[in-house]
Length: 178
Image (cartoon, rainbow, N blue to C red):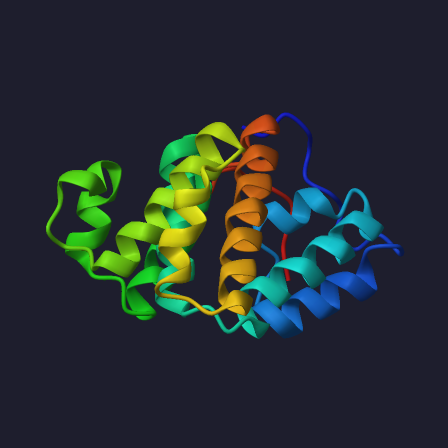
């Protein structure tokens, strides 16, 4: 159970953003219902994550591979639950998802995916990266895509840390969501 009650989606300050979230995402997920305790934070979060997920040039399959790896490293089951079907839809294979906890020992990843996962691990575990990690991804990605990759790793580390700090889980009961 979450450490705070979920926000009231009918509160006057939340209603315009709730309508926008429903229009853009189809429903208000647990994450956003918690964020809606602070509509300005929820609005900024929505704008940033929408840019990462819908406006970036980074391959959606790479993006989802990164998100799933961050979820594993940070022990964030809600993040993994939400993104597993998206990852499969975007072209990540079930074998890749099955092997992601020990990707270094798997034959299911391309050299480019391995470079991306190495960077993801480095940023998530250590924050600072060796130059070789960035050099490796630059062999496969444009400068824009490298920036988007690093922003994605950073963004989803933020997401998992928020989720886990407040113990937000898919099975939590909450007030009615539109």
